Length: 114
Image 1 (cartoon, rainbow, N blue to C red):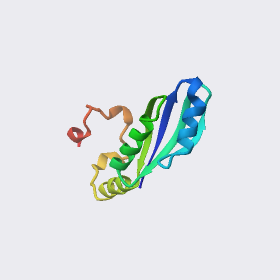
Image 2: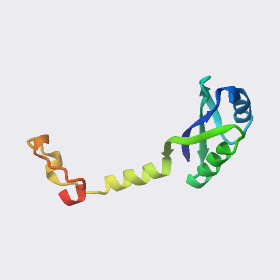
Image 3: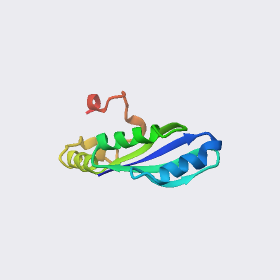
């Protein structure tokens, strides 16, 4: 299951109209808004494809200037990444308490450092 937060923006004079459409929709959940025209909603989906379809529905609401995904959580993706970490090997120097942070040289690619 994926869940994402979306910031929807409209002109302040259209906030009530857009809020009504959002609150009566079946594809997102309203959370809060500012009278400046910013509205925060969340969407859920079984995958990114479903989330993107719902985002496009938000973007297609009349008087919406923009609807942008701000944060996304993907439960299955998190589990896959955890498995990768659990099954990975790390160089001994990463756990060496005698290694000083200032002695670690970062070259923009940790794979080259390992």
